[in-house]
Amino acid sequence: MASTSQTQPTDTRRRKGSKHDKTGCLTCRYRRKKCVENTFPVCGACARLNLKCIRGTTRDVVPPDWVDRKQQPVVRASRASDSQIVEQHQSRCFPLCPSAPSADHAEPPQRRHVMRYYIEILSQHLTVNEQFNSFLSAFLPMAMESTVLYDALVAFASGHLSLSHEAYRVSALEAHSTAISNLAAALGTPQNDITWYESKAATCLAFVIGDVCVGSRHGWYTHLNGARLVIESASATTSSGDTLHGPDVFKKSSEGQWILRNFAYHDIVASVTLRRRPLMDSGYLDGITDVVDTYLGVATGLLRHVSTLCFLDEETRLSPELTAEEAAARMLRFRGTCAEVERELQDWRCRPDAAPELAALAHAFRSAVLIFLYRLVRTRLGDEGAAPSDDRVSTEGGWDILPTKIRTQVSSILQHVAEIPVGSHAESAILFPLFLAGGEAAEEEHIDAVRVRLQMTLQKRRFQNIALSLDTLEDLWQRRKADAETAVDWTDILDAPSLHFTSRTKKSTPAERLNKPGYWSAAFSSASRSMASLSMSSIQAKLAT
Image (cartoon, rainbow, N blue to C red):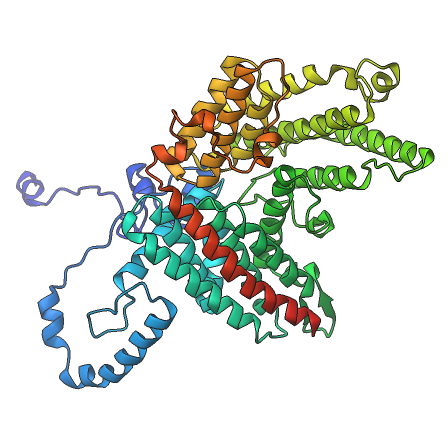
């Protein structure tokens, strides 16, 4: 009996393997968990626990020479003619890239590298949340069906690459020129289809983002206006026979809703620095803001208040042609609406399920909108000749303590921005709050906090709108320090002929510190304006028909 037990093999309990061990993410493997919801690019477990989903590289076990030996000469010969067609098509669509040396249908290495850069780097710099990144989940599938949008994304990525790699500068201009020419040609043959309008509006927005990122101060607004024309001219018939017009066409799909939110972000935020009303009323945002947005996370609904204030400011401005009754009515409407918006912003609450960094971003954005409100009131009181200490002004909205209110919101912005980790996704949307906070910062501690955080954000993302904003604030702070008796505002800096003043010749700009030649932004801006006029003419001609 004993001998039998000695010869009998001992049962060893082994851990059951998982069929996902080879294909699952490395994060789950490190945590010794099964990567059951093995979705790409973020698995279900990592998305649920807010973990960084890391993927392993694929293994190549087949020697290239063995593959070459297995390929049949007949197949190679049959592909020769097709290869010529592919090379001609690639030359037309992307002249900056040489033809692929191999005989298969692979894209040119440079074009492939640019799109990989867009997917892995650039799209991550633009979103506030990796899980809800519409630059990947919406734009990429649309680009697979629209070569016009695909070319625009390549041009966008090439332009950003050129900021750090000199070899891409001429190539980026060529890609931009080709992409916008293809857009103009596509607009010349409109289609009564929802996807057609979505892809063309998305293409215009890709040009907007691209121009902003390389520091163009003019061309981006032309493209934004082009996106507006596409949205307003949209018309499509649904499967039930109903005819939709304008923004309602885009609300039929998640991609279209993202395009509307994308447009609203650029249109409404830009209206603050441009000091003009948005191109479109914000009513099209009804029903599409209760999501985690790529640009603003859970703060998209706050854009409505900015739009309301911009329209209010323009519609209630005083002029010598107004009668006393008309002027009084405008003043009453302005103050009443401002007081109402202030109450709504103070009563605003962030959604309870928001991630901590997105909640901090939303609160910082809310404080930025309040600063914008207080700036409008301060400017209007100056235009009306009313002192903040007047009893009439004091009782209507507490505007007698405007400096205190503004200082409180500056501190709030810096506090909430400090809660956003440096280099995180949520950091991509802190420019607007930090710029308004920096424009009102009076304490050296606040100024240094704004400067350091913008410099760190610029160093990581290299978006030249951040560099231009920092340039503007540096000029503002220097002027205030040189002449404390004279009131200087960032609007005075923007209204000057150039953002770079002689007072700063001894100090390099953030753009120069990043080795950004001045001629590059000017050349890109000039090309953008000249080529954008072509696409705008096509859109306007379509509307006329």
